[in-house]
Amino acid sequence: GLGRVQLAPDPLDTAFQLQAINELRGGASSNPDPGCAWTGDLNGVWQLHRHPAFTPLIASLLGHARSYLQGLGFDLSQVSLHLQRCWPVVSELDQVVGRHHHPNAHVSAVYYLNGDGSGRSGCLRLFPPQHCNELVPGLAVGHGGPIDESSSGGELWNAPWVDVAPQAGLLVLFPARTDHAVTPNNDSDDLRLSLAFDLALTAPLASADDPAPPEYLAPHPAQWIEVARPA
Image 1 (cartoon, rainbow, N blue to C red):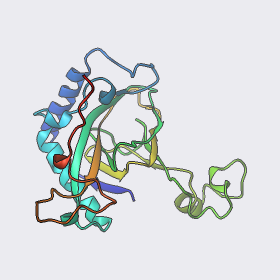
Image 2: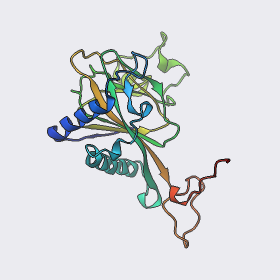
Image 3: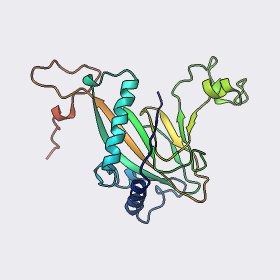
Image 4: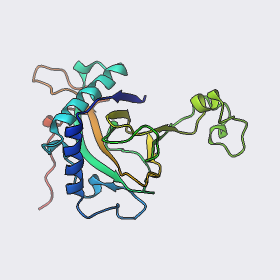
């Protein structure tokens, strides 16, 4: 399911965060292909949650991530939610992020530091893994098929993807296995700046008296042992 939360960030806090991202990016402008947005995870900036300009914001966003799980029916007493990494994404004019997903995580999230909701600076594009209303395989992807893409039914129930336009303060959450991309930034007057997150679910930390964690959840990382590397 797609989760959306519209927050009302303090403009002064946002200004400090934008300045911090520009300092972290330095002179880089792409990833490294000129057509690809700069992403911190590929440039050593993957623990933004430890940066003092972002710590309070990210703590608040993680609270909404727990609410997202509750909305999906999870009993929060039976799972632990872990932030694996958090990184900035900066998109200049005409830059994109290619289609991909995050196999290392269970939940992915994006928080927009700017954007006016028009989609001019590029939309988050989510590709459903299955088109449950696609009565005949292949209809939803077009190619001259009988789906009227301009109709309300075509847009809501048989669209090949879902676009989310960036809006300052918008948090978007979705299953990490969902393929997604970012469309080109067509706003010549502004960068698109966002924060991306990867989160993982495990069993809660177990005490000596607790039963073994369920098979479908990894045990809590504090109870793992790293296998030593060969000498």
